[in-house]
Image 1 (cartoon, rainbow, N blue to C red):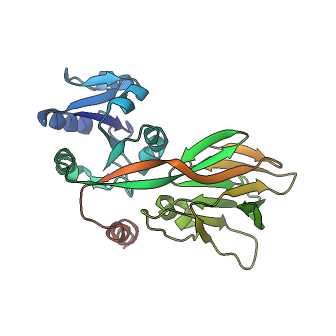
Image 2: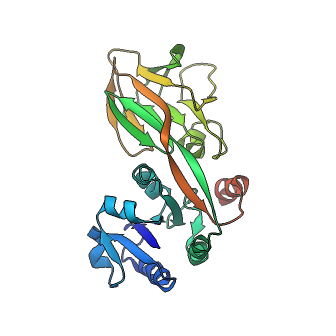
Image 3: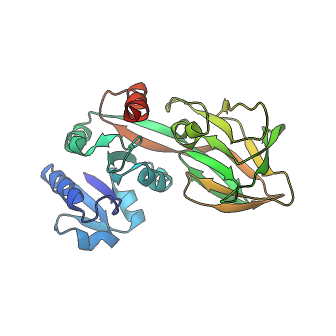
Length: 280
């Protein structure tokens, strides 16, 4: 079995923990795959070094060592190869990377013994100027770094819904509902359902509520005032300027992020431990 390893080098600077896990996996009669640009960090003849696409294609499953941001960065690439992800938390919150470091070897053994389930997480597709982007958490239209509102309109299935002046607009997946959407007052959605949450950020109106729409709905978002420039981001990791007359088309993606679960912890257990108990 081939196991792909992707490490956030900022979280494991000397690859000490990564090397320990690699050695453990070799003892389980597996072949670790590592990105070529980290070749000088690994000294083991049984490790195979590959370019990015080769690693994603050859891996039977992929271990990501980092935080939630690491999974968000890699999810869109891994989804195109339909590979399963085991996330090891090297960060703070670890909502997606819910296996802690001390649990990693047990989790890997469970995967090798087929004692796991896979959660298929819905992703979003956003198209602007004929270019498509995919993301796991949310599509966000915002006002950039200036303290000035932007007027954003949305249509759903070709029907006008509303247009508000606001700091931004979030269209979130169930997975992303506990991220920026939650901070903006949006609803929490169970990650195994397929819905989208639409939440305005600081709308300049007396009454505004987020709402939930079907994953089959097609959303068009756009800037309604000619003198404004907004910015489009995906999982908080890209920023593309949007001008008046440029439409953003958002829908459910055909790709999924496959998250490996090796414990019986439910969504509600994780929600309580990650979102509530850490704040006590």
